[in-house]
Length: 437
Image (cartoon, rainbow, N blue to C red; front, side, top):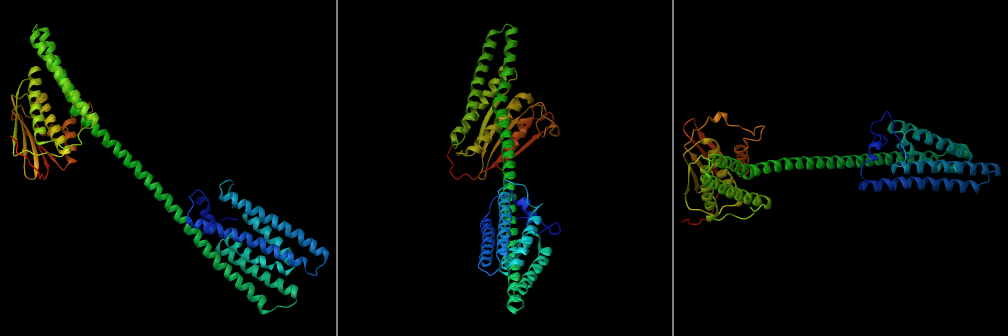
């Protein structure tokens, strides 16, 4: 039987309500064995008392009364053990409300049997454990003392005398029961604490996993937004500008210029489609060869120059390389490529320049990329630190995030009327370098 003592917050009963929902631990087997042992011991000792009563010289009436009381006590105890099992299995409400009444009924029947025959005094030992567990430390010690006195008194009543063994035996049994009860209580409390710690650990792990999932989702959204801006958005922007120029050429009757603009739109759309496919397939798992990045940057310069000219905002774009080229890790190469796209797109959209230079440099401890234009420049204090509400202004912010993942830096130098320099630097200790013609 399980209950709680309102005056003792450390009793097992006060942790039972929470422990019922906790997962099983290795200590539960020990506790279950102790409970089963207590119930089996009670039944065995009750049977011993009944047998001793039947073979005694007591009258038939007293023996019949002992049989009836023994049956009632066995039935009442069995009801309690079944209720305890259902409670521990979660199929019944808490036994806290009536456990003390049940224990009181068991004690009353035991006292009546003790009056009939002193051999029922052996039941005092399991009763000690029941009181220690149900009543809590303070009240249970008083109850154990009273039960010990009852056993001693019953022995003296039935024998007509009081001897030292009649006193020492019950007292030693009571002391042993108290010690074992405390050990059981400590084991029970430790088991509950361990299971609670396991629950808290699992909850913490679940919360951490959920938080990591949220962070991963947010990071992936940021990455997707950055990739879309660097591929689809910039390509569509170029297509819109050139299509407007083509419409103006058609309106002016210049069909040759319009055809040229349409050809440019087709080329830009094809390049944009290729970028989108690379993004979807995530084809950045291999290193970029020494010739690969430089070739792509040259084609980007030519494409930017061609698109700007078709849009009526023509300017010259020159590619330069400093230092011997080397095969770069794919994240570094991708970051430089996106930086070049972002820088030249900003030149085409905002600079109103006549000349731009894209410079790729290989240093002993880093790789750099600079985009220079001789356009109208800008006030750096007016640069957006975060994307605007309309979705613009994401390029530089996304580029900074991309570079930060590689411990890279982005510096911008500009002033109104003096052009702009966008400088990217990524630390890299390349050991294998190739001579680049």
